[in-house]
Image 1 (cartoon, rainbow, N blue to C red):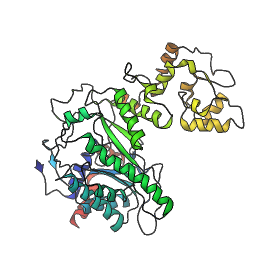
Image 2 (cartoon, one colour):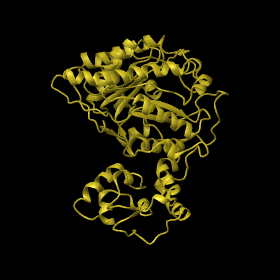
Image 3 (cartoon, rainbow, N blue to C red):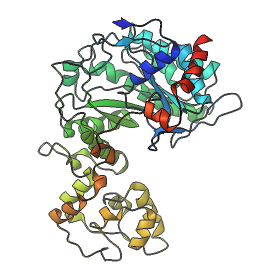
Length: 450
C-alpha cells in the first residue's frame, strides 16, 4: 500500500475527490430545509446547485471519499487493497473545514461523502458519523448531506448517522449475487441488503413518529438510493432492470443509479471494452428507469427473456410505442392521463398540463407545442380533434426511419466521445472561470497552516 502521511489538505482533496468520481449516486436533494440565523446553509428539494461548468453543467456537491484505503479486494475498484495507487485519508475535522470553506466561497451547496473501508466497517462508519455530527452540531451546517451506509457496520452507527444525513445509500455494486461472488468475494448480497432494509424500516417508523411528535428529528428525509456497475459482468438489460424494479418495490428506494463500467485495473476477470465504457447502454437504462418511476411502465412491457436488451438507436419509450402501434393514434382531447404518459414526446408534466388545459379549451398542435410536448416525436402517435399534424403513415418502418433522424435519440455528449466528470482541479475549467493555480491554492495553504 502506497500510503502518504505527509500530504497537505489540498493534496488530499485533489486525490480523494478524483477517487470518488466512479461513485455516481448523487442527485438533487429531494428535501427542503430552511436555513436559520443559528447555522449556515439550506437545502432545496428541486436541486442544489450554485457553481456551473463552462458548458452549463452544475457543480452542486463536494463529492469526496473519506479515504481511498481499503481492506477489500474488489476486482473492479481502483482503490482495492492490491492497487498501487497513492493512499491517504481525511480526518473529520478536515472534511468539515473543506466543506465550510467551499460553502462560504459558493462553490457547493452540500456534501456527498463515500469511503473505502478503513480498518473495518465499524471503524469507517464511526468516522463518517463523527464527520457529519461535527458538521451539524459544531459548524451548524444545514446544507444537504448524502453519505454511504457501510455494509457490515453496526446498525446503531447507521441509525445515528441517518438522523444527521439527508440521504443515505448502500451500493448494490453488481446486479446479481453470482457476479458479486466472482468479482467481490469479500462482499455478500445479504450484507449489502441488511442496512438497506434497516434504513427502509427506520424511515417508515420515523414517519409515524413525526405524525405524533412533530418536533422529532427526521431520519434520512430524502430517502435512500443505490448503485449498480453496468458492463463488468454479463447480465443483460432485462436482468438489470428486473433487479431495479424489485429494489423499488421491496425497499422503496428513491433512485437506482447505473454506472458504466470503466476498466481501471489490469485484471483478467474483467471484460475488455474496446469501445470504452458502455455509456449509451447506461443512458438507455436511465431512460427505462424513469419510465418505471414516473410513467407506470413495468419491466415486462419493455423487455423480455426473448428480447433482453434495449434498442440502442431509439429510447425505450419510442421503441415500446413502435411495437404497440395498435394503441395509437391517441386523441389528445379525450385520452386519459395514463394513456398520455405512453405517448413518445409527452412527459409526465406535459401530460398534467394537457389534462388541465383541455378543461377550458379544445387543444391544437400549437397549444401542445406551448405546453412543452416534443412534437417531432409525438406527431406520429397523436391526433387533435381527430386530425394528425401532417399526413403520415401509422407504419413501424416508416415511423422508425423518421424517429432515427432525431439526433436527440443519442445524447450529444455520447455522440462526441463520452461524458467526463468535472473536477475542481480541471485546468480547462479553471481557464474558463479565469482562475489559476495560484488563485486556487492559497486558501487551502492557509487552511492547512491553521
